[in-house]
Each structure stands twice: as C-alpha cells, then as structure tokens.
Image 1 (cartoon, rainbow, N blue to C red):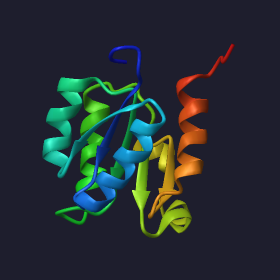
Image 2 (image 1 turned 60 degrees about the horizontal axis):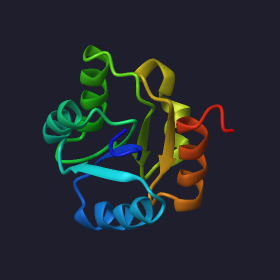
Image 3 (image 1 turned 90 degrees about the horizontal axis):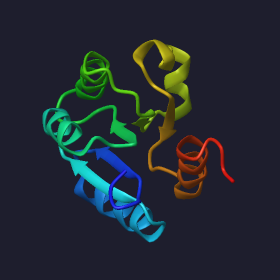
Image 4 (image 1 turned 120 degrees about the vertical axis):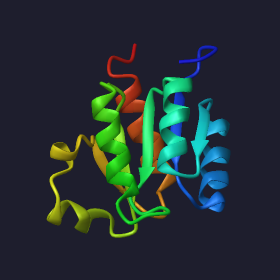
Length: 128
C-alpha cells in the first residue's frame, strides 16, 4: 500500500493492454506499477512491494510468465498472483494454478468488472 492506496503490479509486454488497465485501476483509486518483461517485473516487484500481481503468461519468451511466478515464490511473495492468458479458463484444465503459486487465472482481454470485483474481495477480506 502506498499513500493509502493498494498497489497493483501488471507484468505485460503489450503497452496497449497496460495503458488500458492503468485507466481502469487509477479511476478506481488503485496505483498501478508496470513492467514490460518478467525480468523488469522482478525489479518493479522488489521496488514497489505490490499488494496484488497480474502477469501475462506469454510475453517475450513462451514461459516468461511462469518463470516470473517461480521467482516470486523464491522471494516469499504473499500478494495474490493472477495469471493472464489468452487461453483463459482452458489453462486451468492443463495446469494446476495453485501448484504454480497462482491465486487464479484471468482470460485475456481482462474483464475489468471481474477484475475490480476480485480486487475488492482479495484486498479487503474483512470489509467494514
């Protein structure tokens, strides 16, 4: 949390997706930090200590997203991590998200209303 706002890290190599999500998150009082690669994502993670993480499955390298998630586990990450994939729900048929260290999977393009609902639940588990 920074300045009373939750920090969301978005690791995505497509700048259009990053720009789109930034508009939605900032309009809903979140701070978005971003990275265009898994390697950059690790640096931003260490600098920003995000409250929630969204990472694209396929970026500059086919397994960049899963490698990023494995590194987060080594860093003892406690923030919810959601994988973003163009194959979406079918991804959960071929992998076990929990074994990877994921909290869940979003279909790409991300449904903004669903994301905001999940953010509210995951970041405010005991709303008053």
